[in-house]
Length: 343
Ligand SMILES: *[C@@H]1O[C@H](CO)[C@@H](O)[C@H](O)[C@H]1NC(C)=O
Ligand SMILES: *[C@@H]1O[C@H](CO)[C@@H](O)[C@H](O)[C@H]1NC(C)=O
Ligand SMILES: *[C@@H]1O[C@H](CO)[C@@H](O)[C@H](O)[C@H]1NC(C)=O
Ligand SMILES: *[C@@H]1O[C@H](CO)[C@@H](O)[C@H](O)[C@H]1NC(C)=O
Ligand SMILES: *[C@@H]1O[C@H](CO)[C@@H](O)[C@H](O)[C@H]1NC(C)=O
Ligand SMILES: *[C@@H]1O[C@H](CO)[C@@H](O)[C@H](O)[C@H]1NC(C)=O
Ligand SMILES: *[C@@H]1O[C@H](CO)[C@@H](O)[C@H](O)[C@H]1NC(C)=O
Ligand SMILES: *[C@@H]1O[C@H](CO)[C@@H](O)[C@H](O)[C@H]1NC(C)=O
Ligand SMILES: *[C@@H]1O[C@H](CO)[C@@H](O)[C@H](O)[C@H]1NC(C)=O
Image (cartoon, rainbow, N blue to C red; front, side):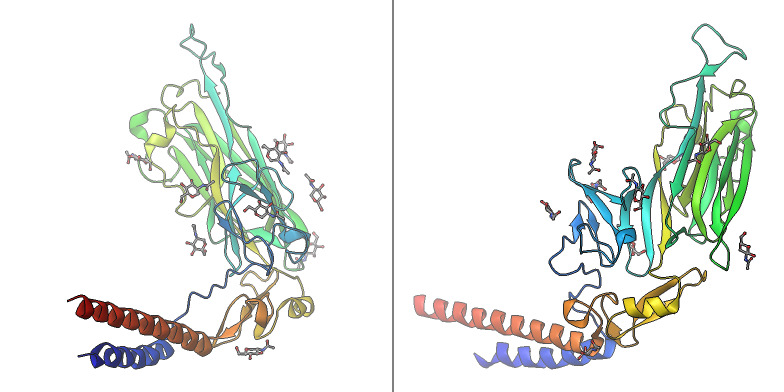
């Protein structure tokens, strides 16, 4: 019966080969490659080129990720910042940060139960700003400006790029007022306990501030704080427990979009073999992508993890799998041999 494993192996190999090529299946090949010889992670974060931690490992200084090894695990920060924590980088053009929120809290002095509240111990500042270089913008499609509280207003100011790439001032805000806990919208952010605004395209600088109308004196027992922040869609789903005096958030996830160039001429230089440059949906810059039928990191040369033909990857994966099966089959044969001898 020795012929059986081998025979099966070849059948399966042929089937797999056909399947792999037909479905364009990918090997363990990752398009999240760092430049060869460079650290590809910092703590939990995988860092694909054009980003990098060390000199000569990033495209230019705007793609520097500062890895602070005094944290455990090490903590990545955007560029040379010491506060903008990076939590995810996608080679497709977005990057998630954990940004400090703005907050203002009031707690009444122990002996007073009336309109003489004094500012309590804020855990954070009443404003929080984010200053980006122009290759990074706050994603307008994936974030919302959000204010939480019952005697609350929040402002968002800053500057945004217009279609000629020049910065213009921007400011907006929303307010949320409620008299008593029973009047809240318990689970939706529609102005009672929580309000939300869309974000405009092209924001490169933001300053978010939290404030109140009456220092929360009429609502302090169920809503002592105002929180104001930009947050990733789905990263914050309001319910009334977020008004609770014990709820003390410090940071919220924010999605940024990155590009590698502002003109097509300079991005074609950045895009490597088998990759092309394209303009982003919001038209603020250009990125690279692999040509149809190719997969890999479009910012790296072919031999360093750049765009590879998908059929070649599938072939390599299938051959790898085939060899592995051959090895297992041989091992199986050896075990059978061993048993028949020891009998
Ligand atoms: C690369 O990462 C390791 C830890 O993962 C660290 O010890 C080393 O210093 C890093 N190299 C550089 C050049 O930062
Ligand atoms: C890193 O990942 C681990 C496991 O997924 C998680 O528990 C931890 O909170 C993460 N640390 C940071 C700093 O994101
Ligand atoms: C790393 O973080 C520590 C603690 O926050 C800080 O004191 C230090 O300056 C940081 N190092 C760098 C290189 O940013
Ligand atoms: C970070 O780098 C930018 C440009 O290289 C510089 O203008 C800025 O002062 C630096 N910030 C810090 C905190 O070192
Ligand atoms: C990182 O971002 C990518 C692309 O947006 C997403 O598919 C992935 O789930 C994210 N990873 C984490 C840990 O959030
Ligand atoms: C962009 O903003 C600049 C500076 O405010 C202004 O001069 C220019 O006309 C604006 N361009 C467009 C297309 O709106
Ligand atoms: C943000 O706004 C606050 C309140 O108006 C102001 O005090 C602060 O200086 C601003 N921060 C920046 C970086 O502009
Ligand atoms: C509100 O959200 C928190 C955190 O997601 C959850 O633990 C809590 O059960 C929710 N409360 C209600 C009333 O839905
Ligand atoms: C494009 O990919 C093919 C096959 O993967 C490779 O042979 C070729 O060298 C690549 N072209 C460039 C310019 O890197």
